[in-house]
Length: 89
Image (cartoon, rainbow, N blue to C red; front, top):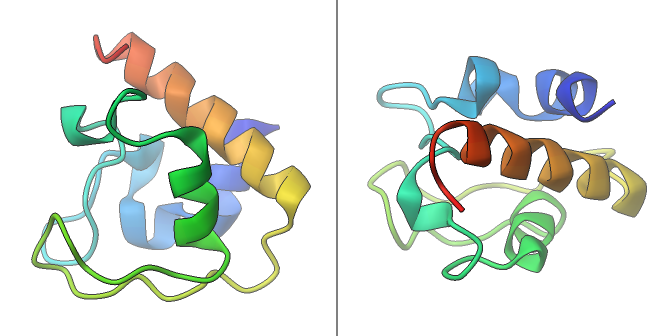
């Protein structure tokens, strides 16, 4: 379910498997987003109300229309799984 949610809500900007897109959006599988630096709630806050640019030169992240709390939970779970697969714990 998490992959489907990421594909539907995140992939158009953050790319396939949240690997980022040059000039568009950062990779969510980057070490800067590891759990000790960005808690799960940071992803929820970025997706729902949006967030100002602070780590990357891509500009502000606008809110993602239609993303619910349940969607956010599955998205975060899948992103964390991708991070672990990429050695980010």
